Image (tube, rainbow, N blue to C red; front, side, top):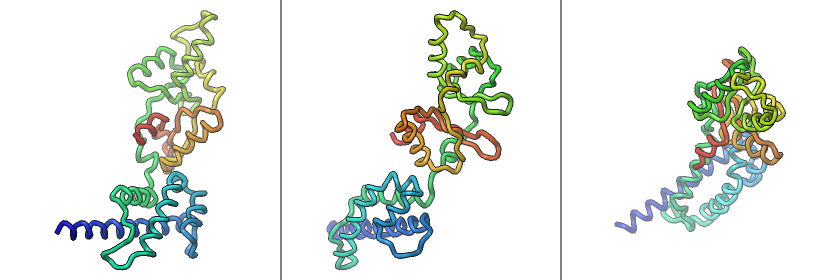
Length: 238
């Protein structure tokens, strides 16, 4: 009885693996817009140029292709496959399949009411908001017009540059403290339909260019609808 259950579990694993594998193949064809017969490795190579999810899981998929070939070419019956995937392998492949079929977007994950400051608000107002909300990145507007992203690091450097001038006042405007931030491109606007994998790539790309990206500002036709910070993405992966 126990042996039979193990065989049934093995069959389920191999069939689930092959089903997910086939769906991923079709997803890659859809991404590159083809119905031609292409090798799995060629599909990965072409589709990764257009899709961040495939770029993230490229090496995993290449390894799974080897396992898939072993299962398909050496399977002698529905009850026996020479290479049976472990549960965690099947789940990992199904996770990739799900990510391709229904990509999680930054809008789904990070849409929220975003606390903002007005350009004429004071440094005191900014520091109170940072203290109360524990935010370290705050969008600044002049009316409805975006003027910059204020960060705790930016405030620190601004204070450091003024400490010897003795001209610091808590009533100075947020606009004046933004001068340090304006020297750096510390944010990007992104559509709410962007996948979280694409968002992750934007942060990594900025680092590779020696630039610190503090936040992605999520927008739609209504305006600002959310914000993504590097810490947000770290929490997802943890």
